[in-house]
Length: 437
Image (tube, rainbow, N blue to C red; front, side, top):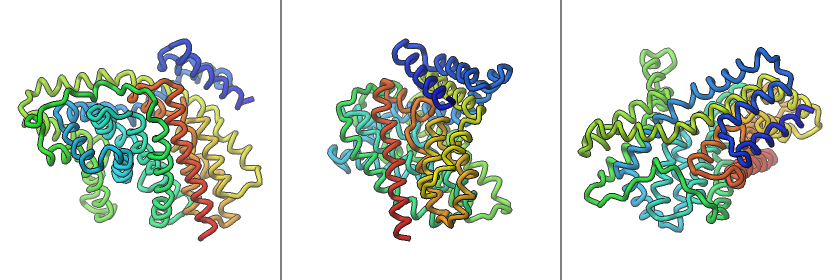
């Protein structure tokens, strides 16, 4: 019965948004309340659950998305994105642009959290798309597939790192095996799959579309690239420093401060304000107007993501994730497959890859211990399952839909399928490694 209620709520959400044209934020609130009532959440607790879900998801994303949008807007209007797009296409050629984007996404994705990588790389994708009149989804999906794989498979990202600790796995071996699995997953879900989407209509956010500037008005190649990748450089530097200096070191608090994604973006946008703004002849007022325009453009996205957080929290509070996990636990299936299946089921129901992964740990850990399953492979199996079939209760689904300005149907046909390919390839890869090791 619980499963039927969830299916009914998801179907109703899609109907409200796609057919009735209700704004997604309002639709999410209505469905979250309805789900809470139907699933037995006490009436006096539903409002608190909705508010907690909105607060939790915005607390982690509002700074990243807002500052990322400002940063991306300045990179676009200053001509830096135009310069970067020209250099990338000249280096790779238009025929290989998807492979170039995939490679950039993988390199960037190893140190960057997914949300930061998305908001920082989307302007780069759009600059290439508009300058060379290329299909947005086909060009952008390989980079986003790479970001998604690193988020789900590779430490030091939060979910795989937590799984390594909980399963008592080896961080280095897990990273090594994860990279082995990541390569085919990214290739199949990125350039191979996206090549079938070249005719998918998409008009990306206009906030990141700037008029093409003459060559003599563009910032230098070094300035453009250095400013654009500064957040990545800062995160890489702090990651390396955290290994060099022990936790009790005098410098550790300072390193931890600088490693916070919000601090990294504040530093980056401050630098960009001068390197791509003031020093390029723009007044502070003009730069701030660029930032204000960027915030207006992503306000609706923030509301939609907030709504998805409300629904996710209501579903989590009902305990639906543990209910499904308990049902699957009794199935006599190979432990690695069972770990993937439990994580995938929770992901589909709740929408959060991190919640899916961490919830699965407590359920599969006793089985893994008894069967002496390789803990490094279990981390990857659960990580792959936690990425399966992202849909309307996942904030990543709405980020992709709204930035690329797609219909719900086309978001399913592109984003959701891409995530599922990544998940399935990860499972197959884990099982193949298990037969070899």
